[in-house]
Image (cartoon, rainbow, N blue to C red; front, side, top):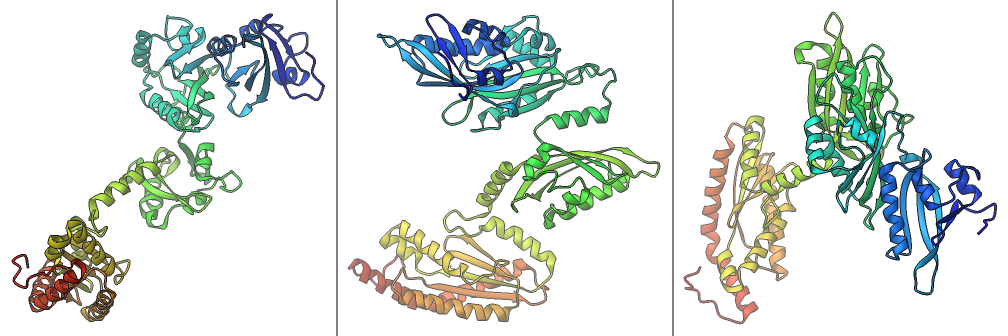
Length: 539
């Protein structure tokens, strides 16, 4: 088969004869010439690193046996170029066996697998759980098994030889992310400090329909191959940090310049043009509420060794799109001048947004009443401890839902729950963001407001009018009793105000109990068609 000169990079593979024919663009893409191009698929595969050849041989076997789908896709490194390949069956014999396959290429330089002459290749096939190493990889890892699949004994020995648990865990998390980035780099630190670290690169070669990595290949090489000088402590740490997927920064206090790694910029959605190599770029990005524990704290550490040489904190930093990213920020001073001022500080940012979300969800569950969605007694106790320190105007308004037992007994507890939710919703309409509404339990609610009693009395009058309007509309009968207590100068303890408000609420409840229950009883009789006796012991 011949191809037009303007053809896309492709080839044909005639299975009965194992012959290959490449078009001119395919030869150019693979860095081949008509003279150096492989003539058979066997010759083509022989030019691949051992692990990748093993994987592609399996794929080709699927095509030969007719078990392959209409199109087989994969990626691999060929002649120093990382390519994506699609195989399409275009001819079958009378029995349906594939006879001719058309292959197409795309170049994927962004996930290339560079490796020097001292490095080697590996491939991980997730479905089979196989880790394949070439001889150079095995040698770098101190394994005597040579090339091929890594057995369990070798894997256990590898874990003993290298402190790579954290890196391997990071790699596993990366594999579990649908549509994860095409490439990952990790630094494997050896157990003995006199040995050089190893740089591991990993690239996704094949994904499932959900985008999860099925086949991953990569390289392994001495990180500082060819350099005679040993790695110092600070620079060794810096290299380790730069090889991971966290965001690295390196502040030279003598020049005021800051190096921000590509991962750091990508994490924030910035480029070097939009995020200059200056400390102010970071300072302007920190959330105002987190400024003290981040910027000011780092400045104190930089100013004097009395504050220590290392720091760590969680805070929010603004992304390019205006959103806030939760990060774990860590740093350490690597050198100081004769006066103790920092000359250089290096650090890293770890994206903890998912952890912070989980934390927020858990904290919300702890502090909120699951039935009504308002705060619970646990949150209220913490709030009262805080306002005790503030010493400002404080008012406490207690509220009790009348007739809840009557509703539960005649309409069921699900209706009683709905009544409590309605009460919470009505009360929420009349508090400010800085105020607090909590359910104490049962049918009791409390509002804590940072304002004088006179203001709350006016608001209570508004609440009562709103409840009258609600009941006039014919919905669930919402009858509430209230008790108010306050201190305009903060001289009365919150716990005392709470007891005072509760006592006044009980006084009002006794006064309005009969009238409230009469209205609820009338509503129930109209709703159910059944008479509710006045002397009902459930009242």
